[in-house]
Image (tube, rainbow, N blue to C red; front, top):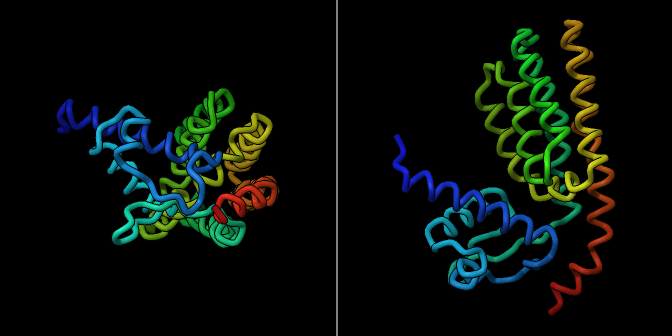
Length: 226
């Protein structure tokens, strides 16, 4: 069992991770910037331990990198990386759903409740957490744990891109509508239709994210040239 001190640190590191990701996405921490841990800890109001935990998670996510002798450096958001990452889940998730088979009606009910929470989520971070939770619950019956681990890893890598997507209420509603179409197919016990709807859902965010990345390219070039 975790101690209260450990739970508090985990909460602080979660909050620091979320704040840092937002700062990277909106440019407050520009690409190529070396992160000063002392200044960041003061800025976020946390100690070095939860900050370091947050930074290490963002390394795993691909948002920053640890360089010998330089510490942590912000990695650029790029269309090339996004396209390569985003092409994978429309392949992997339907494969996992096929292996999982049709979920029980109790699981479908749980998915419906999660989707309602997603529709009323306040803030991009909450929307992303609920969307991720929905997809994890959908695939929970998949027996191939390595496949599920691959999906979780790619989900982490795309999170900083999807943060931009989930800041728009209409796109959160679109995700909710996509989920309802998947659930309708599952309630009808049509696994093929559910897999096809899941594939469409996982492709639907590509165009708005690419448009957002293209719009920010000139600003990012200026920041990198400093």
